[in-house]
Length: 134
Image 1 (cartoon, rainbow, N blue to C red):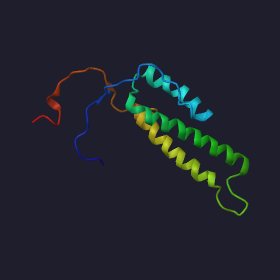
Image 2: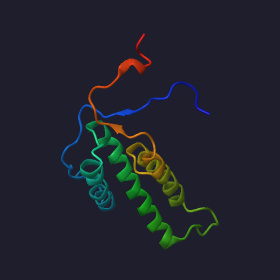
Image 3: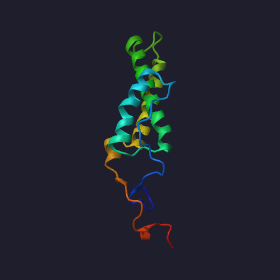
Image 4: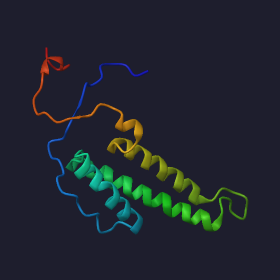
């Protein structure tokens, strides 16, 4: 159980991304495809992406790409190596899936994260409930 006071609403960042940015040029093909799929959802549909979130989106896309690349290697080589040990790509895939899952939650891409309090669009509001007011 988490202790302490919980925020009533999530406040949108001060520098929202208003146009879908191009994926970074150094991205592998899978990462670019994921960026092109997810960035428009976050920018145009949900309007939740800020400049501060771009690194998280980058990590999400790169980890998705790493996971897929590792899975392709496992598909060819098998899960177990010739000497009976687990394929090294399995560990890479597992770590990439963990990073992907964490970044997806931060970006609001999971069912659980989407069910949390919505982003507040108003600039003002009643500050009497703020834990910082004395």
